[in-house]
Length: 316
Figure 1 (cartoon, rainbow, N blue to C red):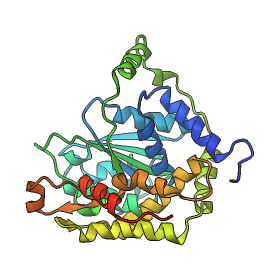
Figure 2 (cartoon, rainbow, N blue to C red; figure 1 turned 30 degrees about the horizontal axis):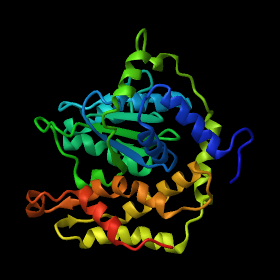
Figure 3 (cartoon, rainbow, N blue to C red; figure 1 turned 180 degrees about the vertical axis):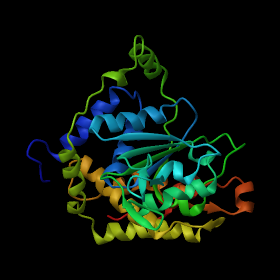
């Protein structure tokens, strides 16, 4: 694997991970997936209960890699212009001037995204797919390393608007943090006896290191057998009983790029079946739509993907 002038890809990953883990306790698997999504340039949806550290994780990632970070609290009265920006008439120049919204950042936290109306949610679609937004007929490119981390609460339904299938498909990964072990929760208490450890957090890598890391992704090899394995997994979701809508080709692409990221983190220049299996549920499950009868019978997207992983032959 190639190296930058100072650090190898593995060293960059390990430095970022260690920096984040100095603030976020007991979430090694979640940090690995979040970094894989970031390096693969695929956005992440965190679905979990309040207080599990979703916002802190997003902020810690931005601070660790020295990128700009902005947070939008999604509410029912939030408008698309509150996200994208608005053109305001400038009398001195006798012309409209575009005032950029908070979406013009590197890392954007869309907090409780399902509390905003579908119209406002859709304001993110073009940005997430093409790293650009259209305002008043003009295209505006977003910042480099644009990365959306959205959150939603899985237990509250009052006053929420479930994300449509097209929006869910824009997220490369969806996963939860979950509660940490008792000893890790005690460590959290100790960390915050006087102040939050995030207050002392400093960047541990440069933007050059991040760019180097992302440029290594195309160099990670993937065999034809591994590509076929990914496609077979996704195609099986389209044939599974009780599944109204299966995984899209975008799901296959996301698995490929994220699996390459994981291989890169492990110091390998090729993808193994284990890398694909590690993120298959998180990449595919949220894209599935279960029909009503199967849903009432207890069928879940996660269970569907887990069963497919057991039945699809693994490349030798």
